[in-house]
Length: 245
Image (cartoon, rainbow, N blue to C red; front, side, top):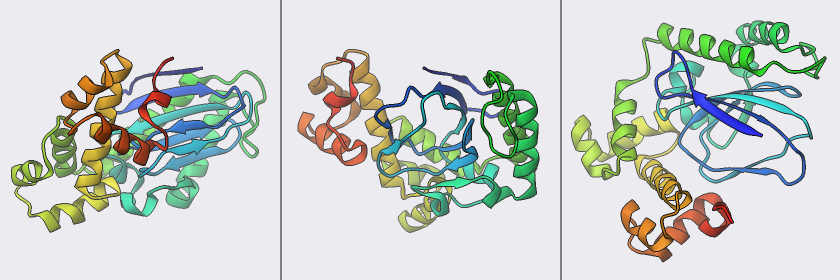
């Protein structure tokens, strides 16, 4: 079971919820985002920006609630540069210390779990957990003065299909300066972010029923083979493995 909705209080963020069925690990594709996660077994975690697909293994019945922060926003919420969290899943306590323990206690009170061991003490109430994650993230974002506007602008232009050179020119930075800022904000350089966002656009088109050859052209690939190579590099499998049967 998986569902998501737009977050409240953090522009562009998404709240998602899932219950693991067990079996094969779930393939989580890179998207340039950082996530604030809560697991009914593992507690509070931070998922850094991935360069390749992350295989997420969960116990049957494990409940997950996440707040997916759009590219460039996570560092302001977590108080850490994105590149330090790249390809990692870390305990929130490692970043927030006592504030993470306080949040865990608040979640235990609304979710029906043991605050020390995180196991289920009854039916998990996911929506109050999501609301707490939204509230805390929004408060930290306000305290930080909001996300870096450069990150929001660059990510928005790249998501719309602009070239890295065009995005750099629009924000008035040279290639090296943009690369340095991108490492801090996104966890990798602007070219990698642009390729990841292009892959996401292509998969959205293909999942909507657009043939792969047409998808490649619409998303800005040289041809279908180029699309397949990029998807395999970032997702670990060809596009056909990621589409409905």
